[in-house]
Length: 256
Image 1: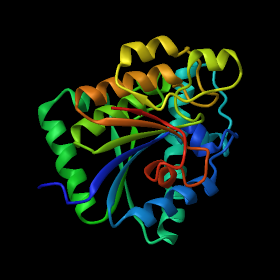
Image 2: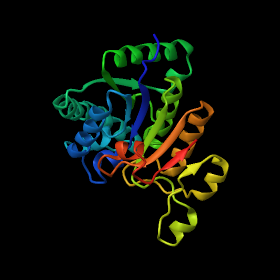
Image 3: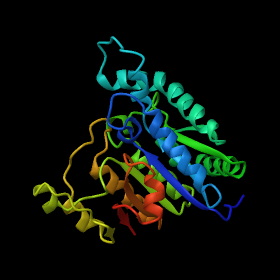
Image 4: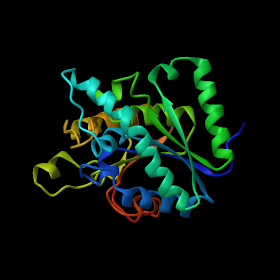
């Protein structure tokens, strides 16, 4: 089954974007994302890779446990995932958008048959106007909980689905030059062609809720670049951040 004529965007939403840097999922932010997708749906089809299950759970529960922190986080992800999907469902359906859930593990990207199955399933969903919302299958895998906040998962999925653009939403206006951060006047690097040079500009700061930080975004962009896919790192905290980036009305980093 072939891709449609629409451009395909893989939108990666980290915990920081979805919570608007608070301690719970922001319905307003999810509505903002839905409104943009609704506005763009004639020209673009969207696949979403969404973090936020752990943040969604923390609204409802505090788990008592003597176990290792990663197992507690896996349990929280398991509790939070249906809540997260419910928030998407409620906000998107009000806008006439249909969603579906796909849980993937890294092992799925290592088996040829699994990869074929993922592509075929997602193409059927998109053809029928369903937006696939992908998360790591956190109860069996810990990679992204411990490192990456779904950045790598988004890049692997983007390559597998031959998307046109991988948009990674974060809490900065793209990647800043190291000098400008040191001077406390952040300056966005707008176009990147050399990822090796970019690595020298990036510190190893982690984002407050997520497990990512810029290092994992550069690793994701490297995977995407090898698959000939452009990566945009945009500020997801802004309203209309997808529309603004597409219309060149905001500052963000484009890795070509």
